[in-house]
Length: 86
Image (cartoon, rainbow, N blue to C red; front, side, top):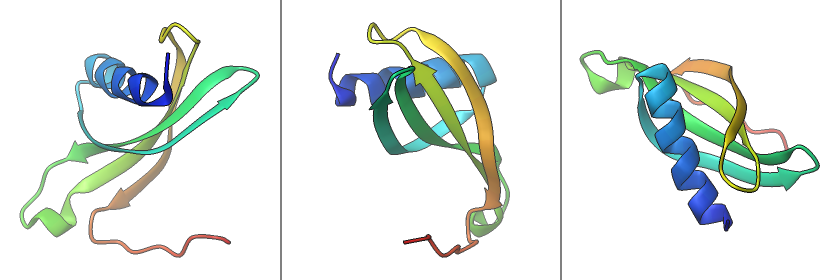
């Protein structure tokens, strides 16, 4: 599978397992364990939207797109700006 296919599968699988709505894929890498995909999800919808609680989940899939594991690695407010490390 290509990276774009893996990203699509990761979003679908994670939505089914968690019941949460996926927003975007923020990263895709391949290593010795398989494909690692970071997916940003809406954990809690609020008004205004800037106060929504979002989370980044890391999903590991094998080469056929089977989910091996997943975990939440970050939780934040939609309007929260963080500095990325260079």
